[in-house]
Image 1 (cartoon, helix red, strand yellow):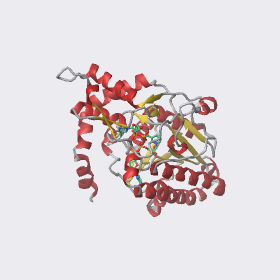
Image 2 (cartoon, rainbow, N blue to C red):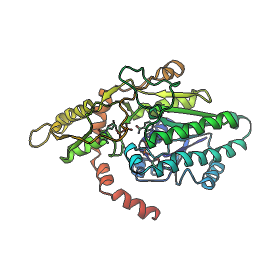
Image 3 (cartoon, rainbow, N blue to C red):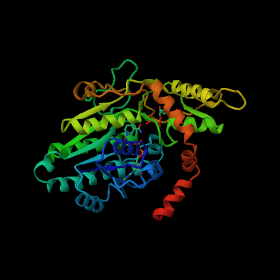
Image 4 (tube, rainbow, N blue to C red):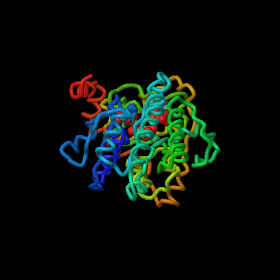
Length: 353
Ligand code: NAD
Ligand code: TYD
């Protein structure tokens, strides 16, 4: 048996592939375009592992995806591939529309044709699991209850609008064609292999480099943080026991204002790697211009995951964030490779322009 993971060289996808193969002998076909966010170094420990087959390609390439499906015959597809950074979507939405909307559509078309050709048990047990975000629900007021699966979609950024579109397409392929889909909407992740353009790895990286720690606006925006390995265990559980056609909200009940998150990171760094001049890292905090259309608060009601699938996160924010800081301190080579552009050079050398 085989699963096909798209976007498996990115932050969450690579954590998922590593976790999957640590717990199962079922092989993984990892299909990733290797954009700036995809990094095969995340999967270096699987280099000689025959259970991991990496193929470079675009989910929007119908012919290539169709060929792969017919060759490897996966019993499930987990779609992590996406453009994922809100700030980049504000500067240039085009890639988000192409990958998150058009790419998901073409992938669904290839999967529909493949699934349509399956027979019996192979057909009835097949699953297409679409990994999405809580950002599709828009922004909460302080006193609003957290997002449940029945909240209206009210996306506010080109990123969240493109993810919302992809969720609608996935839903429509179930209702119209009967494709056995599952959709997960998760809150903000953090942990190993997080690209240092996002808040938590960026702050760790800048703190250690003696650079400013940029806080957008007043820093009181709230995000609901989940340790990435808890997201992976939730996805495994949904794949195993989720009801076809259902949506599952995944979160860790960890709402924190951004400024609190940055203060926590600074305090852990003060303890684990104090600055040579004895000053606290929080002295590097710098308030900068706010993000346009910045969503004020996200929060996930994860009770359906707990009640129906018996899933709960293993980490609290305090344990997860400490592990994360330690991981970055232990993997400075990984960070250096990405931020120096050496990784990009490697991709071009390996795969051509
Ligand atoms: P990421 O940006 O780190 O990784 C995305 C991966 O997809 C990269 O490896 C990239 O090369 C690949 N990719 C991009 N376009 C592709 C294409 N057209 N074809 C094939 N591969 C392509 O993103 P991430 O943070 O790992 O997020 C993974 C998924 O989880 C995304 O769908 C995202 O919307 C969702 N999500 C992320 C978070 C979060 O906090 N990071 C939270 C909830 C949901
Ligand atoms: P980010 O990690 O980009 O995730 P998302 O926008 O998907 O929630 O940002 C998390 C929060 O941190 C968000 O409210 C924006 C804020 N932020 C900053 O204040 N400074 C920064 O440099 C970055 C990258 C984000």
